[in-house]
Image 1: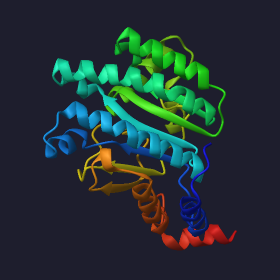
Image 2: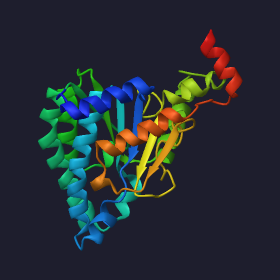
Image 3: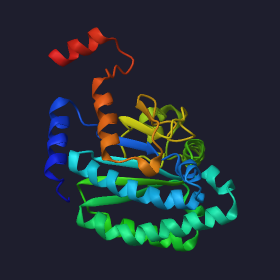
Length: 260
């Protein structure tokens, strides 16, 4: 992983000393279009500028010890956008994969994807598959792109696959619990997010990781995604470190467990 600059490393060291670094951060990268519109530019201009934010946040997460980073890249609902915008977004995704895969590989980052990948254009799927294959053995961090993804789709797809396995007698209904259900989701090899960051001031999760966000801490930043950089990430982590994650327990129980 590229070493941070001296000043930035000092910030990262203080962050690590002040509390726990989230093991898994998920991000709803919102505001590309609104940011561009404020500058009298096209929405596509905003999407292009957003790639620089992705690069900085991926690099920073690898430096501070985040093991999993999941980015909401393209939802199933996004297919309903104007065809011209969707086409340009797909071309932008292809270009980003071509430009960034070597950098990810050199930095020991594994690329992963979740969602209904069968709906992607052939060129996108080929580029994505090649990038995942090249980086599959990397260990520093897993970068997951949620592409043609929706939480509801993933849950329905899991139910269908469980039903098929019940019909095949591979499992029986009595075996179904949270652990087994999670294994049928496209996120099956990824731990649930510790922290969800949404940029652009909107207070909703937009059909993202509906099952996995059950106990995730949520942080909303007013900054639009093209402006979001590592200093904003640091602030989100500082806020995360102040929170008490109780998972349904009370504070006294947590303190008792810590003393054991």
